[in-house]
Image (cartoon, rainbow, N blue to C red; front, side):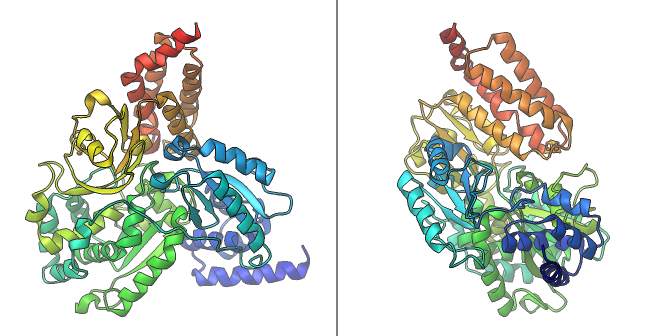
Length: 570
Ligand code: SF4
């Protein structure tokens, strides 16, 4: 590189570092912009960024190497990411993968010699109801067929050069789509929840959420009021409200729909939370796969600022100052875990922290932080607008209210649905047209596989819990292929920090591949399950603890199908 080019690049990086306050918490944003402009982050860039942020270059490199959307090697102007998770696999992802490789003349992980295209796998693009799906840079393409692949590549080739200096962005936009009818969210007048909250004291708002018994809609089901109360009681001037918009669980896409169609509710819920705990700053952690939603979200935020619903004296209440910014993820499922998400917000690798301390004590930048799911914030608004009693009238005693479900797989009507918690698996299948299913994976890769003989079980925190993912498997599906797909996902997404997860999950997949070949005895299957149980106990965070779940439930409920292969192979 010529000295003048280096000087120019340094100047550009200085401006970027200044834009983000030369603070480490701006590191991810700086890296994301460099990647976008230059198609990779060179060693020189890493050195300069480290210098400007007062870090060691190794620290910057460790962050770049952690996230799948950041690259140390030059990428093509069009980065194609084909979704490989189970719903897309069920509808022809393998055939499309081979076709992409043939058309481009490269393998996955490679870049064409002319620098036009790079080809990568993606772990769940959140388009499971419209799979197979792929991303071209930031734009999502759904219901991909071989013909569509040709068309997309052709459009990219035609645009190459025109957009070469701006990063070759726009090819085609497929808007978010849902099969759902009206949701409860449609019946809430915008601003009604915040107005009701502003008419109450923070203590009264908290009491309303408490009375509704709202539990987090991200999957863990932690009582929302309990989390908020701990933040209220925390003795600190600075507190934060974080919206976890990093839904990456295979089969989950309801947050995509909420963000696309009900963003006001999410921001209103965050504002109500800020009023309760006394926060002045909110952050939406948006997964990189949903970058195409960012513009819309920024526009909604801008409008809300103009309406006095963000900024100083929110809603006319003197002293209530609160604003929200969007922080982009960079392709790491583990960042959906709240402590990993906070690490990522601080410009670190998204590695889960040891707990305690919990984010509620020591969260973002060491201050009390509540982290709630996108859907949870939207329900907060409904509860304030319609009352705790109204909310409790739906659901069960321990799982109050309704919930959004992302339904995909072998059913006639995939999409986003609202159902009361406590619905049985059989009732859900009837609604979505999946009555002949042999099994349903509830809760995504980390959830449970419910076999047909258990379809009377209820989807609720006290029985089969879920963050919203429901994947339907028809009578002809091979359940070991399902288990293999989920384990591949966990191997790819493991942060590698602890041994049980890093070493154990690859052992599980080796075992599943042996099972697939019919090289299995009952004692081998038991050993494999025992290893899975060890991982559940010994892994550091939810990712490793949940990684064996699908295999264990498939081994339990489909033992005959698995051992039948052995008999067939003999
Ligand atoms: Fe990382 Fe897996 Fe350990 Fe979680 S369980 S800390 S993802 S290695």
